[in-house]
Length: 313
Image (cartoon, rainbow, N blue to C red; front, side, top):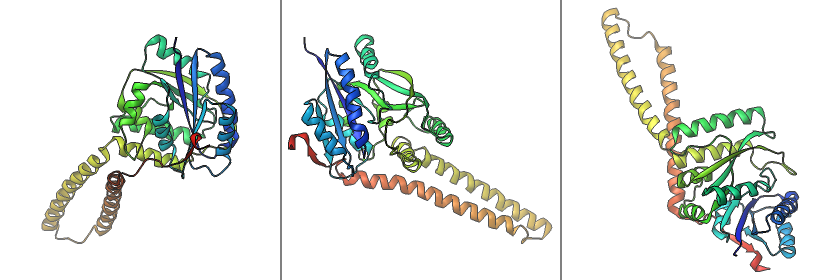
């Protein structure tokens, strides 16, 4: 009987401390699931430390280990896409190398697909000890916001960590846009998904490569990639302020004719002009973000560039 092959895609950026530890944990799981075949595909996303050397050591030790090294840092989304494009398994999962995605969960996820006939089994975080109160609060607000303004409903605390059938991964690969928001893409392609909650453990080593500034950019990417409502809101607000200004103009005209005082209230006028000017600049910025995304898409540049793989050794 042919064994099922599980490919584990692991994007890495300056994670030399975690790579070997992650391999050891996956190796334990593979021994427990000895009826399945495993493939461990590391994606070196332009690391400047010894991450690539650690990957090469593991490849020499275990033929199940593969690696793809980018020519520079292209970002986690590009790393995930490269992993999906090069994985050879019947089932594919994407995991963080810091062990905040516990490899032992693969057993339960695989069971959900094989025995319960799901296309995908995904995890969401019940709690995240590494997050500050500010980050936890902003995360909650983000999931509520993206659920209301986009067609991509997000499960609060959803992780990228999920085990998928090959058919679902092939559908994701058909979405070849340059600006990628993988959580939205997972939702967009659909398929029958089972969700499992868990408490996210602390990082084993190193520090998070996603500070609040990067998370903010990621949030903007999610909104722009899967919603046009900011543009609709700007149009509606423009219409509302036009009506308000017209009504106010009539009010001023009538008051001047009745009271004969047409110059009072200039501080209010200055405040309104300043406010409306700021609002216009804000929505010009929103439009500019959408235009910049179009600009990047029409260039049709590659999502990633490979410098080296295990085949070059």
